[in-house]
Image (tube, rainbow, N blue to C red; front, side):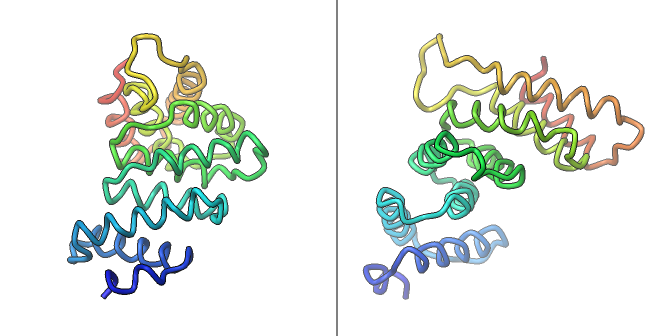
Length: 197
C-alpha cells in the first residue's frame, strides 16, 4: 500500500505514484483514498518547496494535479520564477501543458504565470498545428474569462498578453477555416463559450 510507504518516498517516487494515480483515475479505475492523495499531494509540495523538481517535472505536475482537481498554485509560482529567470526553459509544448492543467482543474490560477506564458507563446503561434492552436484558443479563452487566485478585486493584473494571444490564435484559425477539422471547430466553439468576445 502507498500510505504505509509514503514516508519513504523520494521526489521521483512521489511523481511516479502521482502519474499512475492520474492515469488510473482518468480511465475510471479506483486509485488511492482521499487521505492518501492528500498525503501524496503534501509530500510533492514539500519537495517542490525544496526546489528538487526540474521545469519539466513542474509542468507535468501542473497537468497531473489539474486532472485530479487539485490546486497547483505553489507549482505555478515555481514555474513562473523559472520562466522569469530563463525563458529558455520553456518549449511551446510544455507551456501548453501548463495551460491545459490550469484549464482542466478549473481551480484559481496564477494570472502572472498565464500572462507570461501568453507572452512567450505569442512568438510560436505561426509554427503551431491547427490542433495546438485550437487547444490554445480554448485555454486562453478560459483564462481570459476567469479571475486569478491572487486577487478577487475588480482591478486585476492586466490580461493584455492573454487577450493578444487569444486574438492572434483566433485570427490564425479563421484564416485557415477551410482546413479545420471537426475537433478544431469544437475547440473553437468551446473557447467562445468561455469568452464570447
